[in-house]
Image (cartoon, rainbow, N blue to C red; front, side, top):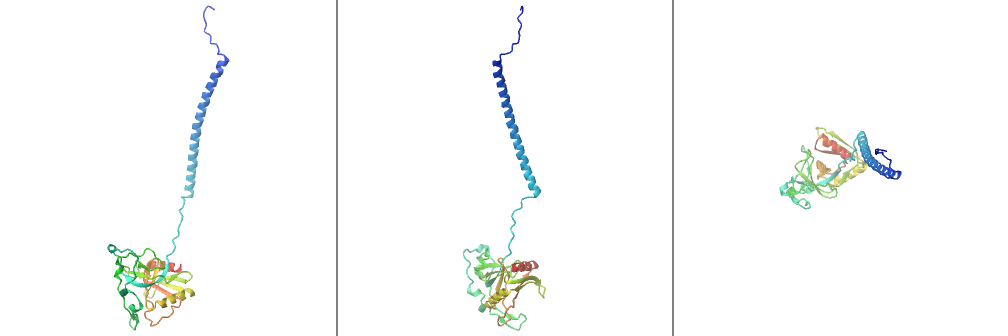
Length: 265
């Protein structure tokens, strides 16, 4: 040859194989890396889809409803009225247990001195003033049936501004004691609650009424005084209520219905 000719000579096989392997490994690494990214994205997407579907299902079914707590009806207790008390005055607050009524203010049979007579009212009686000792004592926060409580009347009930120190409960009105209780108007248009007792309830109420003859009993509904009837003031001696009781005390229609529902249990 007169001229040198540059001829591309194929590389030997032993040279080509390592290079091809290196290129193949690089391709595999790139593929694996891309596959990892794709897998991560797909996984995230699937998780989002599942979450969205879950939320959508909850929405379709409606939001999860909270547990419903059915409020129980207030307890209705019959308690003796120990004395009247003035409204609470915060700047005269006293701490500690509520003391008993002072003697001049106690609503005992002797202090009330109920005397039947032929007047329009049908009787005469003394009415001791509220005990000033309780001005600094807040009203009781718990209507404990086994202890004396200092509570006030319903918003429209007897002597709203006045409070009462009541003795421990002598009877709790329940479904076993009462056959019916209905809110209705009496002959002069006042709202009352007409209560009919079972034989068991009638016997229990007669016993309590006789023990408190010519004294005040309180109808305590959930820590509020609904009524403070004076037991048979127009009579010289006790007689059975014959299984019936009338709860009154300047009640509104709403109050009377609430009391009737609570009494029936």
